[in-house]
Image (cartoon, rainbow over all chains, first blue to last red; front, side, top):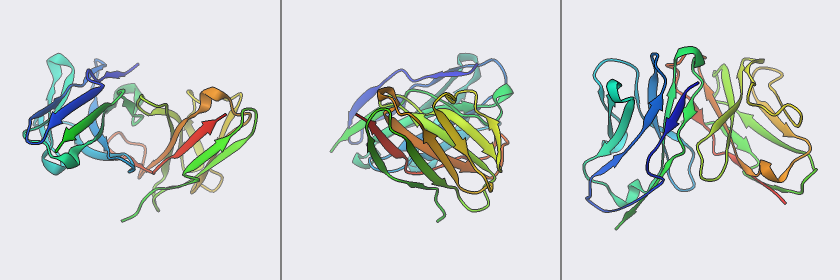
Length: 114
Length: 115
């Protein structure tokens, strides 16, 4: 069975600070990886995804993530955060025997201080 | 922009009562999902439909939960009887198909509080 772990439950940053949120998954087969974001009062929306190819993927709003297969990791990064990035971020995985069923991590709540 | 619709947005009920949640997926999306998100955790899949058929309901507590998608469009998730531990956000999502590359689009959710 797949599992996803996100190391940081809560992160507090000041505006313009750099962000890196950790995500590790456990599954040895071919997986697809996703980051979803949930802004306060809004629904979950896709930030970026990795299926294959270049392990550095770029998403919306200046976010990027790097897939490191040897480390089973898919960390999310942003060079300079803004107050509007305050949200909860979820890493998710599908693929292999699970097909398109998404397995989510526990989420990281990011607060950006203005 | 097309969105997944859910109602009600909030529901408060007493334990042992029955509750029902409704979801209308994005038009043309054949696959529909119900997730449960307990506070402080990520969403967990309860049931997945392809058109009107259940693809996976292995995580659905079938003694009290039921889900249907009779005409392959909108869907209802029911809990009877509700228990205190059912307090959570119930999310509906839809995608064009069941392949792993199909993006899932999420609705706003129904927040259930069981007293």
